[in-house]
Length: 381
Image 1 (tube, rainbow, N blue to C red):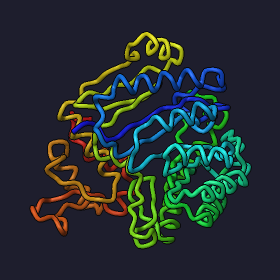
Image 2: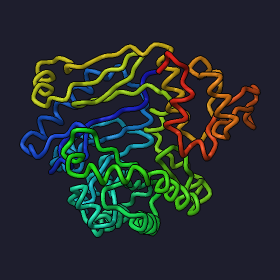
Image 3: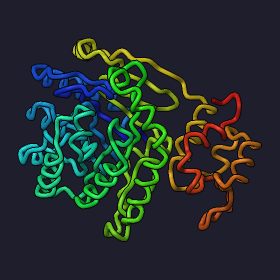
């Protein structure tokens, strides 16, 4: 049937934040147009992989909305029409003109990188946007007709207190987004961020579980569905019957095939995972010469696929069919987790086949990383 999920990587940023480990390139406005040319040419080379009807398109980065407006407009209008078409945006880049470019390009969902409303937290994160920029971006996107906006936040930031987090939650809810992502800050060892904030990061690590529970309690109490470990959407009854889960990311978590184009982009198609190398100049040169970009590939065998199905599937709030992951589970560890109230195994209401399913309990979801690793059969990790 072909791949139904497309990811497009736009690497350009005005500034690289100290904690960031994504494939990014700062500035280079003179190269935006040639990069878009290359992305569209790569997409043409891979066109046979895509289904005739694509379900989701996700344009990520980097900061896609930092891309020069003419180039961004040309990119969006050339991408396939999709049921869910998401673009990531930084608040300071959102203008009335940018919002119209997104709308005219077929975008129907915007993921806005707020990170925090607290100026001192934003300063530590080296973010260019202030609290008012986040609010202004939301209002401009609403004025342009967007009815599906996600806000992204970080917690566990050096200098961030529990009171700061509570204020962020209150201000986020006041803006009434349809979706929110709340990520634990993960600063990679050896980065300038860890050198600058190492001691405070260690202190914050000890508070992470409390912070996580604060996030979950505040959002579920406000009518959001905790559908994935770090992701929340309005419940259907508050969303006019709409399912507001991030459909593109859900495809990753459910083990669906997807195509990625652009530097550093990853694809998983027909049991092969391919990652484009991150070099901008080499990527553009290769495409101009009519070749696929240099990449690294990995064959995804059945054991790997089942292991990933288990690790990613347990992050969701819907139980996994036990038969889908049985060979990846350590039965003794599973029994211990069940006895400890962290894992549930049973038949799911509404499953006509009467299959057994495995899921994490509410407590288990707060400890999902450790529980999932414990469940993994030795030799499968």
